[in-house]
Amino acid sequence: MATATAPPIRTAPQPAGDYLLGGIFMMLIINAVQRVVGLARSLGFCHFLSEQQLGEWALANSFFMIGVPVALLGLPGSFSKYVTYYRNRQQLGDYLLNVLSVSGLGLLAMTLWIVCFPNSFSQLIFKQENPLTITLWCAATLVSLLIFSIVYEIIGSLRHVRAMAIMQFLQSVVFAALGLPMIAQSGSWAALLPCYTIACAVATLPGIWILQRLYRHELRPSGHMDRGSMWAKIIPYAAALWAMNLLGNLFEVSDRYMLLHLIAGGAERGQAAVGQYHCGRILPNLLTSVAMMLGGVLLPYLSADWEAGRRTQIAARMRQMLQATSLGFMSVSVLSLLLAPWLFHYGFGGRFAQAQAILPLALLQAVWASLFSISQAYMLCAERGKELALLLVAGLSVNLALNWSCIQAFGLPGAVAATATAGLLMLLLLLWRMSRNGCSLSPGTIALCTLPLCILLGPVVLTLVLALVVVIGGRTNWLMSEEDRQQIDAFMLPKLEKLGLPLSTLWP
Image (cartoon, helix red, strand yellow):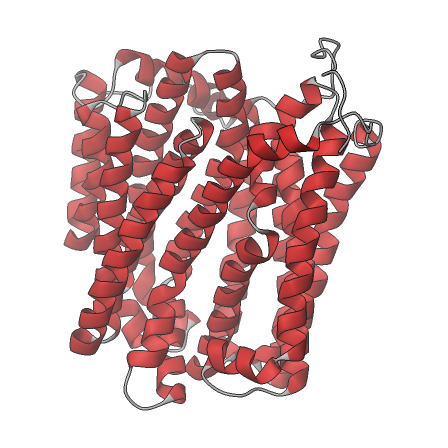
């Protein structure tokens, strides 16, 4: 084991990432374009694939969601927390080398399992045996996605928010450009696997270029790290994060696999139900993908404030982010509900009536999941990963129990209602633990986090509720403070002025 006296903490200027608000604004612009591309891609998938074929693709995608944290052992997730710490001590290269060496073993083990036991893999994921070529492409896609995820995590931990957005954008655009012509020609979901593999590889290139151009000297291992001390520091955090990611992803996909196995009629009926569910979540997934990106961007900034002792600023950032996310996503839900009849009739050819019926529930579940995704950044920053993992265990247990009974009684709508109910429970528990761990949240913030329940009342009522909230929020301190309003104005008004909308304030 290499040991040495700890190097002095660096005070010289280092390559810096983007500022939080500017970075998030740029990310949201690129992400909006990316979401349009993603929506067009999803429309194409639903147009060219049958509900059964769409269900098989959704199941494969669910496996990738679970396989990434399992294979990487959760270790790259520690980058957002510890990259700044080890950069300041001139040990970034040593830290990354040690972490990636162990993660590589997990990747190798996962790949060998898929390649050596293809039939057991297919039965577990698809409830049927698939051709060997499909299984091998699943392995190749997993490897490409894992490499993309590692580089993306490193870039995010260095606070290059624009580069993160570009990587996500490239992945989405390349996948759409390759995938749509392939399934239009073949009509098979399996054609998407090589397309997704290539898209992940191409999207990794900007991140690699930035690391090589700006950080190649810092990435060289110095050989002066106490590995035992490093592992003792990061393992509790990484283990909790690994459990959290695994449990969170299991929560996300458990209803799909329970639909596959509990719906009567065999594998084809189960896959068709998953296909309807996948179609019904296309619009809601736009919200959760934005929230995941925001949560990933937020953590490095919270960590920097935490290291500097700015606890009050952290609480204010969390409060404002939750308020803005809840109101913004409820507004998007209004548009989604108004757009849905046209979208499902013309875009999906009227073949996904069940998907349209579950849309309000799916939007509600997505908003609560998004708020949870953003809120958990505080618990990770405060090194409360164990508590977060316990919350996920409770939520997953409730989700499994509710889905088991609701799917058998109500089918697909029961699955969505069960997942939404479990999601609300998890969100409320998380907000409670945040308050107990130093992040003071006002009653108004908690009320705004539960207000998305009005989505079930339809777009007209939801619009009236939003208008009432804006009036109350602008004229009283019940929902948000004067500081919150000033921060939102300071961020939004210059952007609106550039668009030709000069306003003195957003509030009535």
